[in-house]
Each structure stands twice: as structure tokens, then as C-alpha cells.
Amino acid sequence: MAKGSWIGVRGRGGFVGVLMAVSLGACGGARGGAEGGFIGTWQGSGSATGTCDNGNEITLTLSANGTFTQGVSGGLVWNGRYCTFRASDSGDVATGETPATCMSPDASTGGMDITTYSTLTWTLSSPTEIAWDDSATVQFTANGATLFTCTVTGTTTLTKLSN
Image (cartoon, rainbow, N blue to C red; front, side, top):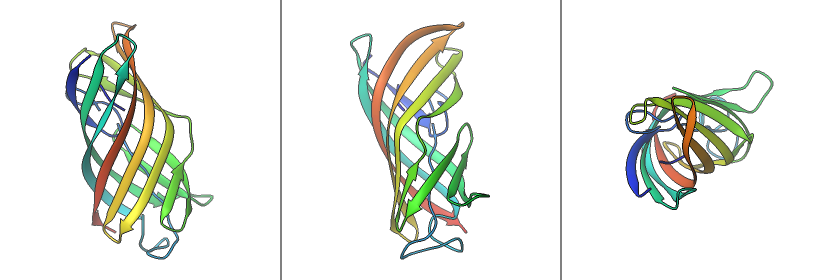
């Protein structure tokens, strides 16, 4: 989820602007269920850091906007601009199904960024806040060729906008 030693801005669900990606949630638990908890529209920001195969370190500023809904066959679904994630929940913690891959345009390279998540966790910290933690590999491309690949970890705080 991130973007050698350069800083980018990324939306969770893909890389947007300089860079971008997304998140997910759960239902059930002490603070929720389908009527509350993770279900609703969320917005937030955070950061991601990591290292790239070209020897550079990377730091990203992350932004996230999306909606958690109840899955048709249970669990939760996060719908963001470039990614849709499925998750199972246990109380106030939702765990995303991985690996999960998203593609998004990268304005800085003119190519596509391919983000493959190896972990996705959303923790309901309060009725209006979620801590979203993940780890991923991001492949930066231009003109159909890979420029470099980075392994990153990120944390985003989401605030509930509406149910």
C-alpha cells in the first residue's frame, strides 16, 4: 500500500493522484451488528511505510473513502473507489480475505499500480472510529513495464460519516 525515498498520497482502494488503495469492516460485536458497528459510510487518513526492490524506502500519506455493507452470504464487504474487500468479523474486529488485489491508475507514472494485500484488519475502536491496519506489496508500472515493487505496512483511522 505504499509508494525510493519518495512520498506519495494514496487513497485506499488504489493509488490516486501521486498514488492510491482501500479498506473493509465487519458487523456484529459489542458495538454493532448489521444496524450499526461497521455498517455505514467511512472516511479517513493514515500513512504507510516500507522498502522497495530498488533499495529505496517509501512513505505514503493514505486516504480512504468507502462503505461497509453486510455481505449477501454473511460477513462484510468494503466498497471503495478501486477495491472491494470481503471480510469475516468476530466482535469488534474484521479480518479481510487475502490475498486481495486492486488496480488503480497512478498519475505520477501514467501507469497502473497493482496492490496485493497480505493482511487486512479493521478494529472498531468506538461506534464512530475504525483502525484499519494492513500489509501489502505494491507493483508500480508504466507503459506495461514494472518500474519497482515495494513491501509496505499501513495504518488508517476511519471516521463514520453515516449509517
